[in-house]
Length: 446
Image 1 (cartoon, helix red, strand yellow):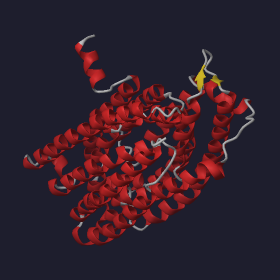
Image 2 (tube, rainbow, N blue to C red):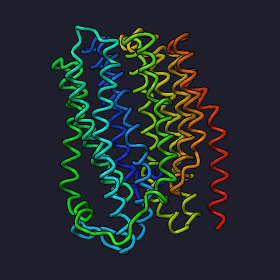
Image 3 (cartoon, one colour):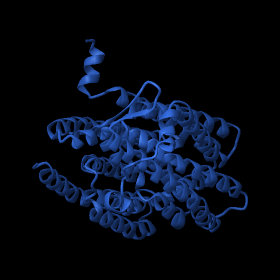
Image 4 (cartoon, one colour):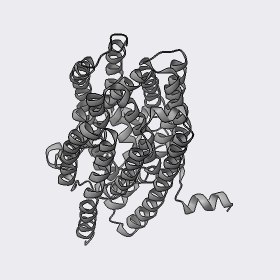
């Protein structure tokens, strides 16, 4: 075994993690290029509109109501008794197959309705919100309306990905996401160079949608054909099986919007598009660390679900502690590197330093991200059991975040935003840890 193979094994890098890491590494490579091009080709005002639009798109959480998290967990438990044959069709236990098919049909219908509501409701809300700060010299209406249609279609594709992840097709899903990330970034760079303004987000979303459609209609055509050609004899009951977990995740997702996506719009409201642009670019940089480190966690959740279904708890714990240890180390190291880089940009008075927050509020967000990531690892382990006991912690955190944001951002600007994020993360961590320990001990007694 070569040194590289030993290193990959020691750091729990399997095929799925490899593609996940390549995708995140690409984002780390392409992200600075994108940020530089945005600072070069977009005015500070257009930059503010760009990041505010991204935050408004995140309102989709109010439409899909946490279903994508539920899909992966429930599919993984059924997939413990299923497999894919050489033609790409699903084979295995008839009961598990029926339940998986019924799950798929349910979520495909759910997201079709959610996508339509998203286009109409969020499109209208966003239009009126942006109109309040509109600059007549900025063309934002046509990009916004076009983006809403494309984002609605992208939302409808989400359950297809979640089904595949739950069915342990994680390596292929992350390979597809890598291709999607590369194409979206290249298209965005071209549109930026052509001075496309806010059309960059439209082009990026459109290219991602094309990759989505191509992926599902080619490689997994026979896989998804099963969902429409097979009549399930046994069905998953939404009211008794899914709803108890989903409504908790739905509330948690809505609360999560206030915890993660409300920062830029509030800065936009109180301090204008230029300040919102700095907040948005900072949030993009900080937010890139989380998905990179979560590669070790997200790629393991389908496997954890299968281990739980078979009650192999010792293997489950071993896999979790190794994956979470590596994940936390990665995000901590990443936060240090980014923090020093931001400090260096300010010391040398680089122009990019004028497009992001100052080092102090930036550091507050980095520290908050590390603490939040630790809580996220614990939550992923517990949710693999098809249960959601974090509802009240999430609601409390969301309310706390919303109240502090309105108060502190209005008075202290970006410093108030950073302080809010870190404080809420620190306060919620002990509650999350307590729930993790209690549930793990209770559920694994058998």
